[in-house]
Length: 319
Length: 229
Image (cartoon, rainbow over all chains, first blue to last red; front, side):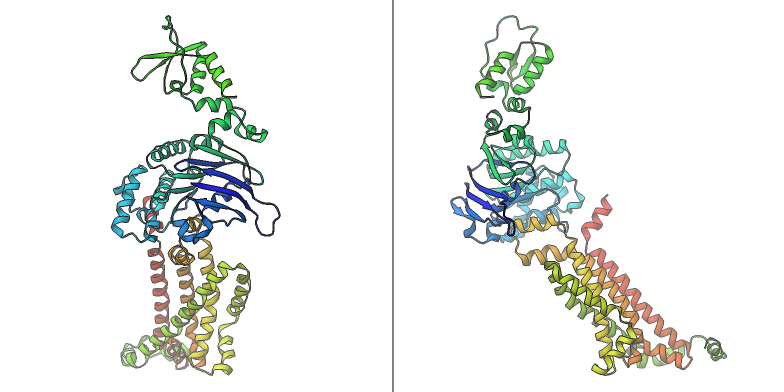
């Protein structure tokens, strides 16, 4: 759906490219997270898609068509755009903010209002209470919800999100991330998501593009692969020394092959099947046990998970 | 002069209401309207110059220092000297007053236009561009509305200043409320001085209050947020 073909960006007057020979594809309906240290060109990469930054060489295809072939303003109206901070228009009410692109596309007032209410509902803000307020009357977390709603307003197939949950406290961020993933399950947008936070990347991404200084793609893979098979020293150190644990946190106990439960189960720790392997490991170590019972939603024993089993799973997936 | 003046008042009431009524339509109202014209037209003309120039200076930063330098020099010329300097070119009357007051207004207005545009948050502009607003739509739909309160503040300062300076327009034959004041001084007639001065003050104060009110009206978002907080 989005295809980068040997894309480079060199700013006039500087010899060094900020993005170099970037080639990767984002399949339709997936979230691709661009992540890397500051100065790695991740935001520049994203901004070349809607031509807020013009690429120097190579090409970016959107649904097979080059982004350079249509006018920048038309292109941008077809791509949702959400950014960090107060990108909302302070002088316009919430409904007018959300309605920005629909109005540009010529929707009438009634349709804009209906769409805005629908989106406010979707992002968990009561329309009657919030639609006629100004952004300054909302909390930071609420403003970011509106920012996401605004990006979705004209139902664009592609969305660009630059640290959209950056400017809020960690608890609110986690909630916004969870809600957005839930929304994405229903709308299946193709999303390019920029963050500097590897944990956010692992959580949000179907695929992660890790960039290193100079705008070079260090690895493009699923979160599991990035964690289990880092392509270089740089990737391994960027994802952190706890990458094995991060990887375990991606897998639920219920999703792995369990040993059959045998007899003397009374004293064993009991784990729900939704518990991650990371938490299971923590439970086992904490309880000083070698194995634990996995319990299904219906309170029925599904099997056993063992320390050794977790160790082997990790080894098998290449860690 | 002080003592001579007080002598001249003897035997007369301090304010001659009869004179006011007799000269209301013949002298006072025309002088008042002329004063409005002398002080408001230059601000309007200066705004028409400053708005495009300020927008240009905001976009192309290199021209901002020279523009403010020229406007700054104009601003420092003493007003009476400025009027007199213009007489060889435009003769006496309203013309030198209008030109000088326009020149005075430029500095404050250009600065406030640029400051107002600068105050628009970078993320707001970025979001506007990223959503596909054209440069025109960003200027008229986002930048100017957000800059407007600061621009109106500049108009307020310019207007109050122009109303004050316009009182000396009569020195070069420009008329206005200054004509009442100077006649009153010449004839040692307090009523004319008071009427001229108080009306000038009334224009300045009502322009100030009116534009302050407008400034507040132009940012309902800030007012409402302030109320809610």
